[in-house]
Length: 539
Image (tube, rainbow, N blue to C red; front, side, top):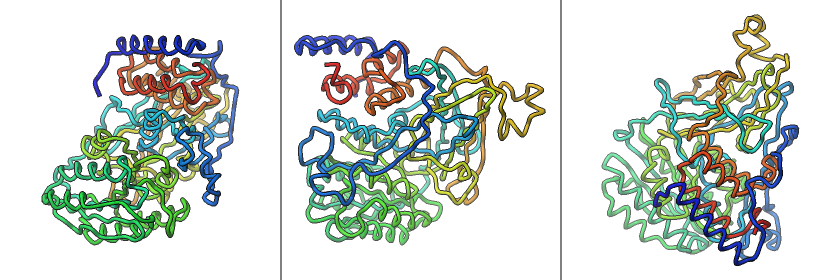
């Protein structure tokens, strides 16, 4: 994508928006915020809920009940996520969750916007918007992961501060690590569209160009039944691999469970000790034969994750896309999840960022924040609603959690309401003498991270304290870029915690902070140009 300066983008946005609004004789978009005040931090919503947007037992008419404007054929499925609410530190001083490096939500929503669809709020996972973009974090000097933090004002809530936590994984030396890959490809009738199987073939062909003689490739397809197209082929035989890919055609029903079982069997048969062993599933998720519900697929993949074989899930297509099933597969299969909406995105995931996509350096990675009640009264985790863990899970090494690939990053935002109370708990309660001497009184919170090396069964612990004095009014590019992505996600979700925020408000914030992100600028412009979703009333 051609890089554009923020000033020229602003001029283009202003000109285009003025023309559209004048032609339509509609109301002005106004300022970034509809009211004089941001969302009040006194709203403490402790409820969380996750369920199907569409019930698997729903009738055909119910399944067609999407809010998208794609037409009656649309049967896409997304889990409903209720946003994280504020938690009182006096009641819940710990916040614990699994890491997430998935980016599928951002690219899937990008597809909706580029195609002129209304954006389904349930398709928007805020953390995946934030984590789609790259940040300039300090690399670990030892171990697999470093912790980066920044504390400043919350741009969408004047009564709160905002803390950024950025995890940076080490860059693994992957050139000499042999790879055993199984391409598991859905060739059912629903995959015949150009943005499905043909795009899958291009994506895997690009990946094959980066393999060598030490690598092994197998190809398994599934429709009404599964089929082994290629088995244990040397990675330097690219012509054979590409030819096998190009021979595929779509047709029939979809029996995904059989294909998954066969793919793992081949991955285990050609397993490379100290190598990278991975199944890469490419599908629209529309499984309709055998095991097909989210729960059934989750149970199946959970049984496979201890085999040492990782799972990457690549989603394709539109109209019948089943995001809920694919996310569940990746989350429960020691894997990652991306949505491929173009050849450029396929290149980004499978070529440019191949080491992060395919090579895990920290598995079962978990984060736990302990807030000091002396200095924090309440907090809200932005996103990660379906990655929450019980506090006791943090030290439980048998608890499955997210995996982080070579060079990958995990970025997290917390809204924080300062406090001047004198309650204490946990670390701060257990160290009253230190607190009285002032050693802990300046601490706002402690960030702790647990992860395992890829072949290990016991986790390592690293932590970092954030001081009240770490607050800075001026923000870095990391902070501003993460805030911009989060704000746009909250606009698309019609968030209760950014009341009055508009897409134009996000643009204003990006301009004010000179955010260098032409990709996000252009997507927001396209969204406003469409005049759909939560911005429709401004047109």
